[in-house]
Length: 235
Image 1 (spheres, rainbow, N blue to C red):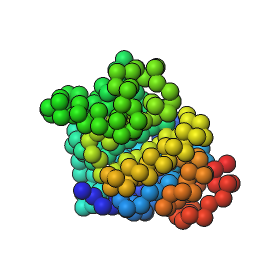
Image 2: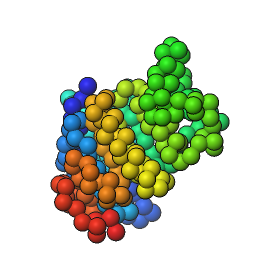
Image 3: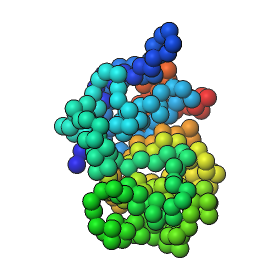
Image 4: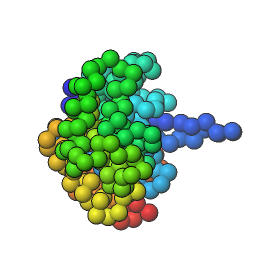
């Protein structure tokens, strides 16, 4: 179990036709499991790129991402996939639910192709759906669920492996203000109950202001790391 994530000299470059573009410049930062961290910034600022590097979905051009003492740059692709499965839960703006699978099957989908007793993870999936207010929706397809319900299925899927960290990229972007507020309250409850660290990328300033910590990114640089943020930060 990693109580902190450390970014050391993280850079991310993208190669264009004639020039390289820097998405992130020399990022040094530590995230702690006992903090709910919100990452904010305008579109194209680098915040989602940063989250994808923290979540090992992408690799930095240079620098290292450490989970405790584990240097993820030392892991190959298969090892990284296993690491994410065991340690990280991911929630995305568009949910990425599989349309042909029911709610409970979507929650169980991280186990597909892995050797673990089906009854064990089916029971865990049911408990999570119950906890998230979806007890009567086990066999509903995503098309039969509201946006808020789909979001909760995605959260259950992210939590089914008991991750150390929950990473969420613009998770309220497709929700109305009421469901966005409920989502935030749910994250706070899950943090208290499960003890997982939470890192959230958001455009929702009201949501960000309720986090323990706010990191502001502009043009690939961290320009703020506090709770004092203005509305102009998200423009």
